[in-house]
Image (cartoon, rainbow, N blue to C red; front, side, top):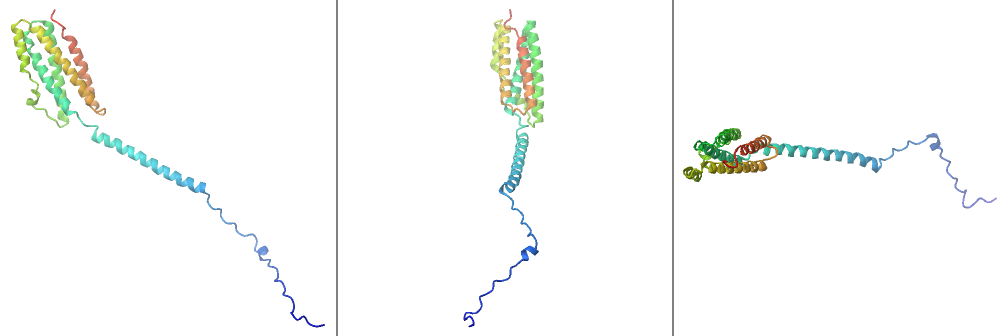
Length: 213
């Protein structure tokens, strides 16, 4: 028998059974899904945003109280003290009247307005604002004095005096309302005093007779 000129055919490699002997391979850790990673990140961002918003609100509230809470409406309150000075002065001219109703109303008006003025001067002083004696006389009216002098000569003093006092008190009430409207909601002491003064002026007006009959 002649040998095969091409030689023996190649033999297949022996089978590898290492994978059986080695046992099961270690499973890889599952990767974090998008939902899990996203949820944690979103909650952290939300907490930061909420914390920042709360801090901003606190800063705004504190800042408002610091810069606005103690602000005083000096101009309107100074005007009130000037009006009060003139009403106090004119009500003191009631000595020329012989009508007990007029005299009583004038006394009560003078006492009440003096109290109002003292409280506002004290209030303004606490706010580092001083109203001088010269400023208080800013509304002194020589025209009013001349009108009352003429009325005394014409025997119409009581009627004229009542008209003047009622107008002054009515104008004063309007000034109080304006000061109240211009005051800040946070200025509780100022607004309470203005409210009390307004109510007292309404009572004073009721004491003044509409006429001298």
